[in-house]
Length: 164
Image 1 (tube, rainbow, N blue to C red):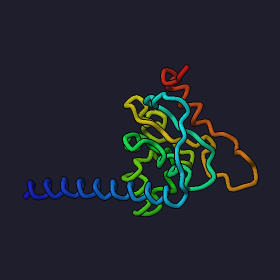
Image 2: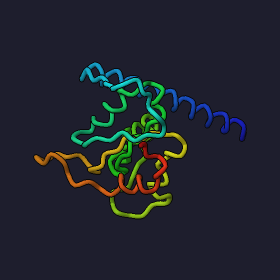
Image 3: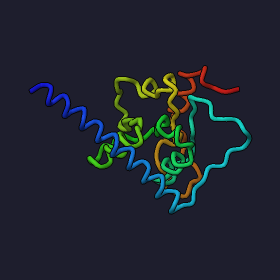
Image 4: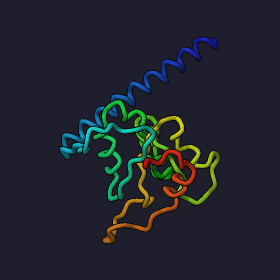
C-alpha cells in the first residue's frame, strides 16, 4: 500500500507542476495581450545571475509585467519577493504565488522567521529576485513611499553579488 501512496503523491506533484507551468504561460500571454508590455535591453550584455530586478510598486501587476518580459529561461529562476499575508490568504493565491511564481514570501507583521528572509533569498543558488524596495503598493499621491530596509540588508548580506 505504501508504494501506491508514494506513486500517487509523485503523480500529484507532477500534475501540480504541469498546472503551474500552464498557468504561468497563460498569465504571461494574457499580460502581453492586454498591456503590450515588452522588455527593452540596452546593449548586448546578457543578464548575469544572480541579479535583482527592482521597481516602485503601484499595482498587483507590477511583478507580473517584469516577470513577463524576462527571457523564458529566466522566468523559472526569478522569484518575486512578496508579502506572505497577501499570497497566503486563499488556496488560489497560494497556488499562484508559490507554485506558479515561486515567490519568496516575507511576513510583514514584524515577526522573526526562521530562516531569516534574507537567507532565503537564494542568490547563492543563482536565483534572481524581483524586489520592491517600498515594501508595499503605493496607492497614494506620493511618488515614492519610504524605502524598507530589506534591499539594504540584502546588499549588506551579499556584497559579492554587486556588480561594478
